[in-house]
Image 1: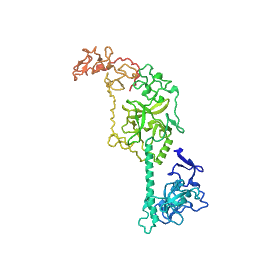
Image 2: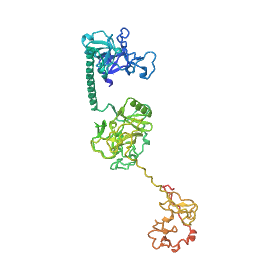
Image 3: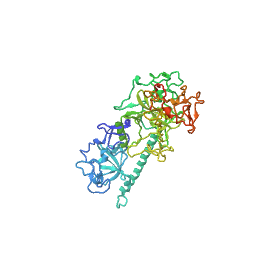
Image 4: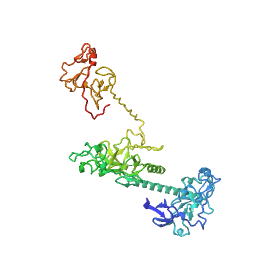
Length: 567
């Protein structure tokens, strides 16, 4: 955290407070101000800080033609680093990254003509007073030699880190000095002590962090970043519903509010229901009562503190509004820093909500392959907003989840621990056990018509009847019409030939038909499979009189225009 940093007064370098981060050799001015070890003055008038490089490669532990670091004792074969021998000065990757020795670190020290000796870097405040008063410069720090238990001030150019495998350094070697052997034993023992302290401290820190969610800034509405804008509509552009303030629940979930059906939120200055409007959950922030809690396997989650019914509004998903370019940059930065938690939802084609740095409780809702909530896009005051709504009845104390529908980037996939029966195992992946449902194609409901006129029995340019399941077609001349009827048109076969009411009985051989009031005795069975025929036909030979029928015409009134489109 920025408030717990120790900053150098001469350069931009800063460290966390404590012996585990502050570079050894830094001079403490105040609890938050230091002069870092980069400003060493002993380089010009002393030889102790000049680096003494080892005679073996730090990678393969063999000698030969070595590339030596100008800041620390590290040496490498250029071949081991897969680089060419550079010209001029060169620093190793550790030094270029700014990693320095720190207090309470076990190191190997080169002093004078003595061999590399194990020692511990000590904080100057914790060494004997006579050691503190010894002459030293910025960048130098006291070391405690194991075995001999002596102290000395040294610079980073003559120390390199001790690793756990160095405890076996003396195995198989003859004639090892007893003091050096004792030093190796003490160094190995002290290394394990410091390792145990570090692991205990990290476990304690992890437990402390697990008691509270990771830091973020709580906001109540979306905050645009950069060139992104929040759209605001003019009052004249906001749709007006037809609800009335006298309704039982105006603009409510069970009402016929047109705005609610289209997922538009009513505006208080436009809605006829006024203060009684029940379709202003976003603007009034009428969120469900929820709480953040620690789950067993999915980190932090969100659960409801009240009973919820299907279709209830839980809360709005808010965060920073960013464009696609900024979204890609943030994802790239997260991948480079091994950040696996993302809080981004696509709002529109060129805007994304990122609830990572800023947001509300909705950012804690976990993914589930069988969720109890869903996201819906609503238009509020001319701008698109995302709301979370329940998919089923939810009891108080139940975790709230929704399907992230994650679009996986690259080859990496995030494991899913939702525990649902249809869980795919990964976010954004389909369950391989579930067979995709085949879409049933509805048969095309094409109405077929006859290719000859029902009046004269001849073909040509015909007018089709629009009544469902009626195949009849007619010539305009046979209908006594000069132009095709406009709109939806039903042929005269569906009207009583006597009173023009809806027909109930039909002649099979001509457009004559009769209603229930006039069908008594009007139709008789014919010899042709018993098909009904009217008095215009001979029941024994109903098709024999077709020539007389061909000369007949039917008088039909021009129908009134209809709002329903014709074919």
